[in-house]
Each structure stands twice: as structure tokens, then as C-alpha cells.
Length: 189
Image (cartoon, rainbow, N blue to C red; front, side):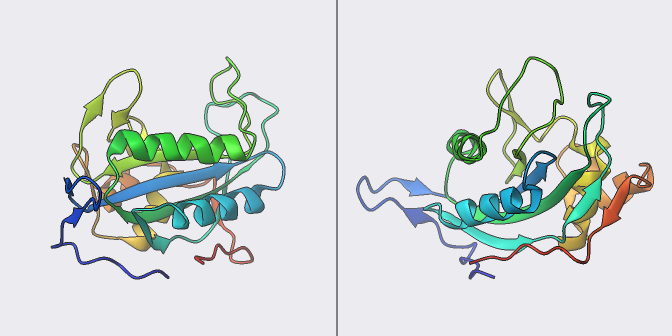
């Protein structure tokens, strides 16, 4: 695991002198096409290689049934990554989209279509956003056991902004389609 930066320190951009607060962010990873574990590991590696991002936790890997996906969709591998970052939420989203693109993510018109890699921002500190580009906290995270279960593994006392404690949210969700894959692991460089 990488070293967690001191949350009381505000990072200053050495070129501009601009101050950037360090925020905790939660990202959900998913893949149900191609080399699923390789894609998830690639996303973790890419996040760890991102300047101003410190990976502080990676959940176990879970295999999950597709939710609201086309009938012929394969099972997903899912995980959650915790990071500390000084990047803004829009910049972090740009990075997540670039990582998806690097793993040949195709965005067909069909909603929830199979994908090689999905990197979703769930929360970025206490940032709220609701525009065409970014919605924070993630609008469907509270309904997704495949996000909340791995997150709870890492931070059982976490609270999803505007929704409540994640362990309480999990109590109201069906987890029957989620299987812990103890034979699969993700590593931080």
C-alpha cells in the first residue's frame, strides 16, 4: 500500500503557488468483457501512477451479476479503490475516463452495455456536483451493493454523502448476486 499523505497538509502547486486541499475519494471499478482482472489491475496501476493521487486502499475482488444490463451480459468483476488526491473532481473524472479509454472502453448508445473497464467516481471529499459532465456523489451508488460491499470492506464506518452510513444502506439491498473471489487479488505498486 502506498503512504497516505498527511490530511492536515494542503499541497501547493510548485509552479503557480495555488493551494490544493487533499480529499479522500472513492472509485468503483468494474469489468465484464475481455481480461477482466487485468483491466481492474490496470486501473489500479494507472491511478497509482497519477500525479497528485495516492492509493490508500484496494478492496477484494467481487464477481457480480450484471444490473440493468442487456440479457446476454457476462458477470462483472468489481472492486473499490480509496485514494487521497489534490486533483479537482473534474480533473479526476478526466483521468478516470482516460484510464477507461486506455482499456478500449466503448460507449454504445445502449445503457449498461458490457464494458472492458468502468471507473466511476463515487465520492470526492464532500464535493457535490450535478451537471452534464459530473454528478457527485454518484447518483446510483446507494442502490448498488457491488459498490457498497467492497467499500464497506475498506471503511465500515464510511458515510455516503446525502444518503447515510454505507453499512445501513447495505442492509436494504439484495447481495445475493455478489460473490467474494478470494482467488483473485489486486495489488498496489
